[in-house]
Image 1 (cartoon, rainbow over the protein chains, first blue to last red):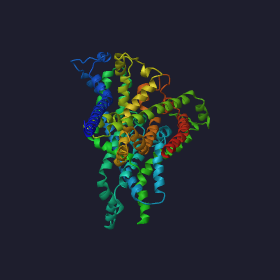
Image 2: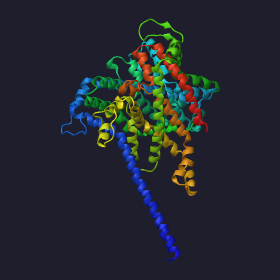
Image 3: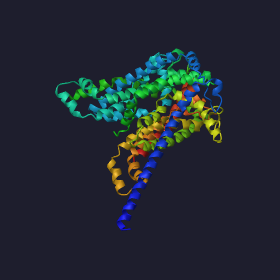
Image 4: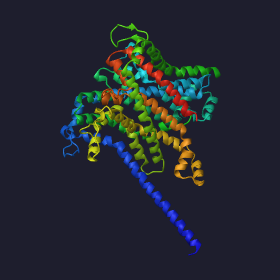
Length: 291
Length: 286
């Protein structure tokens, strides 16, 4: 056969091999991704599954799907602990914290991104540095401070310490830094004050960062456990995580009911997450940006 | 215009300064002060004891155990989380159908409350009827006692932590990966570099800031683990999962010894802080 034919044939083989390799790799990638998704979601499915079994069934393995899903577990869970009450408490506390963090972070971020004064960046770094201070140092004395304020077992006691967080300032500042100065300069030439610029120029375009922060801080506040555990003492004021933990320690072995309660506790966060997916990813991506 | 900058700055920073002063700065100082006292949670009796709390904790096996357990926990969680997250990010970083589904699935553990996750995993780890041992049994593999076994309780918590946060760090790595200019990788490919070589010489070096951020964040975060211990093991069995924050919580609100607990907090801070600084320096130079 002429040399050119051999060359062409070899090239075709090489291309086909590469395509074959690429397709195999693609299948392998998808298989891996699905397997990992199964691992990630598995525990939740298991939680759901157990919540619909009777106590007797739950203690057997392999589990059998009974024709009668035990919906009464959910009724029991709702009766045992005032889940509705806990929801309200959590919404209040988490909502207040999120709102507080937005306000303090936007104001502080504007200062650290836009206003000039000596020592500005050092102060910012120091503030970020407070993130390194571990819970164990501040836990006990913060409790004492809150007690002195008369805020033990109150909503404000649960809310106040979290009203400002360096993370929020960091996030919003990152975003502000990426906004070009021209907009502000134009507004300033028109005679706008700093506050007007902040409210009418910068805030509207910063909605992506602010909504990301809102979602983040709400989720973090909703899931927060140690502080509400210490501060809140009347069961009627418990937030969802605290109430759930109490239920688990009470009902130890009645796993289906415990699982039912957990499903009910987790559902709103999951739904919120599904609705706000975009904001989460954007928020984390913003923190990964270089300063 | 210039002078008003400072005034505006102070005004805008006032809420933050207020919160930080009352709930961060004052507590730090107060904590140090408390550590020199015997200060019960309730009741009026307070005794100044000088360095007695510190001397007590230095001789306390529970204190050193707490350090040991927490360090082991961190040494388990950080490398595993970082590796898993990086692997996931590399896997996911391509035009994929169903990317939305995967990202949602991988992020689900991150958003759910630590308590809820801990409860579910406590059930999964149940030695008799839990999912894990059930599956292991079917595969004819050994079925450890998990949370009831002092040798397996901490690894059990580590596994759960990696599972929970891999998705979070994955997103960080994804942002880092996507910030790498495609031209570099294309140039390397044109020069004949294979996938592994491209990763080693282009991706990995350029990913260093992100990797540093992930490692530092996960270290700081895992040092402060509490929820899972409270819900799943109560520090046991036999103190094998009694981490720092849990030990402190027990001392402060269980045994009601606020002074001693404050000393614990400071001793740990003094031990951990230099390490954090070292880690920070090591990771950001190079």
